[in-house]
Amino acid sequence: MAAWVRALSKEYPTLAFHASINNSFGKGSLIQLLRQFSILHSDRKQISVGFIGYPNTGKSSIINTLRKKKVCTVAPIPGETKVWQYITLMKRIYLIDCPGVVPPSNNATEEDILLRGVVRVENVENPEQYIPAILKKTQQRHIERTYEIKGFTDATEFLSILARKGGRLLKGGEPDVNSVAKMVINDFLRGKLPWYTPPPKADDAGDEKINGREGRLGEMGIKRKADEAQGDDGDEVQSGPDASEDDVESVKSGALENGSDGNENESEFEGFEDSDNEDGGAPIDTDSSR
Image (cartoon, rainbow, N blue to C red; front, top):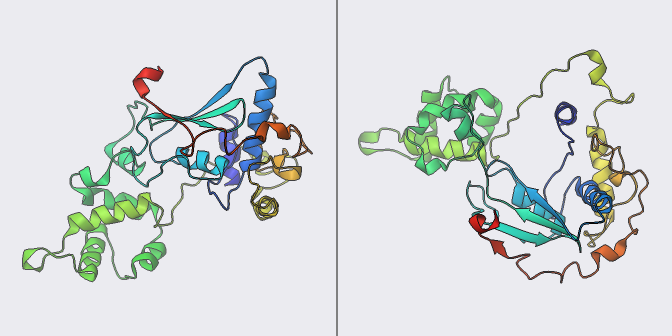
């Protein structure tokens, strides 16, 4: 992960974040960054922060993590968020949960679009044609452990074994590879099958270390313990290392300040839970918001 943060930081300010209401990572740093941005634009009455990206990539989950309660509906399928929704984070900072967008691309294939979770799997025709790509991305030992099968050599044999094991047969005893293929694609998109995309190789050996340190993965456990030590009052800004530049490569612009006091400007969080309705904000029709 640290290598991905380094690579992405070359193009945009990047912050590592794990969305979870009870076990998040990077929440304190993101809130601190938003507070710094709010101070920088103190002349504005309010700051609106939009969450924009591909469908089913965790935009709503990040907002739920920041609010530490479920204010946005989430689902492991694309298109769950259909309208803009404004969520109050602090007195002057509002979060906008946006529907997923798919930027036009001449290079993206149907396989790329499907495996990014952009389309609903139940609408896919001939889903078995995408299984070889999944087998290529996923280590065979993970597939064997997930489905408790062994001995397949290609996608066709894999689907056949899995269909017979699960009793998914058509008339005549033929394996229902269509339904099994859709199941495997869903498992891949929802994280049931472990896989990852390796980061691009560093341009030179100097990228292997930053400021004399190797990747920050070893620091994640320490920061998570600091988050947990905060207790139930998860809406306060983190202090110490969790809001410092050491937080997994931080933000390239250096917007986070070291040693920030978590009680500073605590009044911004007054009425945090009551500043909006129980749903967290009113849905705004996309067309009327433009």
